[in-house]
Image (cartoon, rainbow over all chains, first blue to last red; front, side):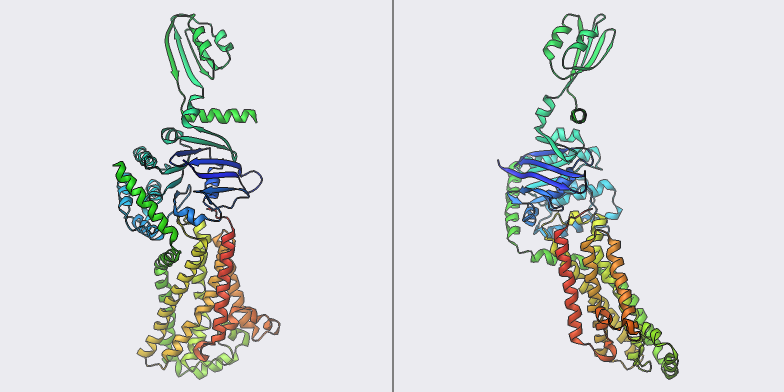
Length: 299
Length: 292
């Protein structure tokens, strides 16, 4: 499988500090790639540069092997895009908007659009000005999906959607992947990224700091450990072990985060009568926060 | 289920290949049609508002006709600068319906007011769409940026013709009904002559819309140029210091078509200037970032 999206040294500067710097990125065909970072980290700037809304200060990007700058129209023929901050013409209905976009794309059949509207519970008959934010978001999703593009670029796709609709959307993304199409989505909803993404890229202050498979990111992260003992336990030896952090103790129990060294922790615990052991994998959100925290301390 | 979906995906791929082969004429047509639809309500409102002015002017002419020589005399007593400013310069004869319409509608209110229609429409097309945030979704489609500029300009130019059609009917219709002698050809020339002038200011607004990201600037700059051009041209007839500046205003080439007919060379020149402004807008918009 080849790379559908490729960025090399992609840089976009607005002022002194904002924008993206030297972003090297590859998104493979058929994968769901999650682009993570807090607001202002550079997610939207990267997407807008890939789609030629913004012109790179330096570096280059290719989508389907085509230059993002010179062949943007041909790229957009093959991309369904949901912008992060968008608005729809107030007086138009969802149906009117989809018919207009279908004409622009040479799509004659709107059955899939109607199927998506039914699944997401979107009202296509009302003018946009009468729709809530969540309902506008649904129309935004449908206009990105209805022409079955080989690449979906979705900037914060579930913003404003209720949990049931979010679940349905994740199913649709799963079906998209099953059809061999590619999804590039930015989010700071880490739970949804964890559920659906094959790989994640973490962007921080305009720099892509890590790209991992979601599994690797989760597996190499810390674990939350809670131990209960039959009698009093001395926390000192546990605290001294490398890899043990944030230890909290009361007379007969310990809780801490474990970054490494599970074997020695278990051997030390075995010296006492252990009555309960909880070993929790953190959510991607906690991993992400820890990642940021660590980066900040290093810098 | 999956195989059905795989088939759909194959169909989609074929469609994308077909779309890639299309020259883009279809998208331009769809964009023009869309812009025309969204301007339809404005066309009716502007047409009726200016048409009402014309209806009232034509309807009041028979009553004023008998007193017209006295009004002409009164007008002669006004300072020439003031007469020029209100569209009744030297040579305008208020005893004729053509002169009366020129002074009340076609040389004053209509060009100054109607030029704001393309200014508002053109400023809305780029800077306005950026401010509202609608441009991102639209440009997610395979549309070259130049098509966004030209489709908006073409739609606005056609909408202008629609407004002018209503204005023409609202001028000629009452004249026929009230037995006022006004030829349909003169009326057609009078309304058509407004088109290049308004298109010019539309082109200027399009350029400002393409250069700046703010709609306010795309309205205020051409609006200020419009008013300043009118004053410079009108006063330049009588104020010697402004005379040399008149050829640099679009109003200089406007004339008074209802009295003298259209001067086609000037009509073509202003139209070309409008197209040049849109071309510059296309170049500017193609080179800049889009913010929402």
